Length: 289
Image 1 (cartoon, one colour):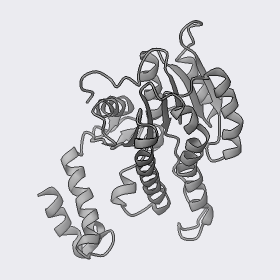
Image 2 (cartoon, one colour):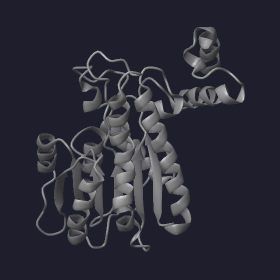
Image 3 (cartoon, helix red, strand yellow):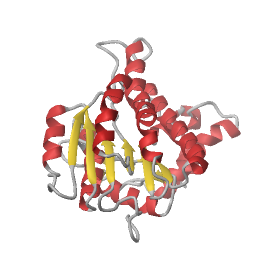
Image 4 (spheres, rainbow, N blue to C red):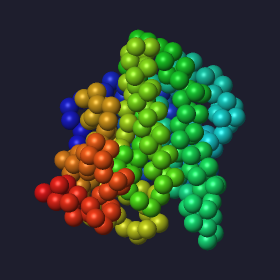
């Protein structure tokens, strides 16, 4: 949970740009930024949901401004058209950039996941290129001012680390986000040391992403607000990896699962051994014991 004071990135008059802002973790983050008196630039591809979200954060006509933009993050042309609008409105740049928009794409019709190239193409277009497009388009706006604390948060996934079976395109797209965030953190450490980079790795979170499967929040899931509380606390501690627990999985259990997955390489086990019949029981004993 949040501990101590929030990082100084969350300050009155600063500007936050959030993709996937119309629901879930993005919306909860917008609420947190708004509570600190920050200007909001809300980006989403769902026009109706974005309109409803924007209405929650009215501009006060003096100190804070909320704007919204309907955007397909997978289109770099769309990003290029958006940037001049943001630059003209916020010439000092962006203080907090959250690249959070994502999608769970399914194979078309009755095709299997290894039969539909568009399943992979569209997943990577949104979940990976949607992030790199945002970085390329906005990084100069984030790094422009070297005198104030700024931050970039990229939303990853535990599936991009432990790689469970079932959705290879999603897992791979989020594994790529992790790698990109690590490189960005490394490069900005010298180029723009006032800009911290963080990889948000949510646990089981009840959002619009999962609401289609559950009418009400399952007891084991966290709310988006809990994830944001945890994220802000870890940002204050200057942590890059923000590995969120939930009501069923502790931080320690997550660590053990990640260690087992890495052990497949180090120990010469077959890939994804945790879910293979011949390794399943040993993995369970090692992880849960």
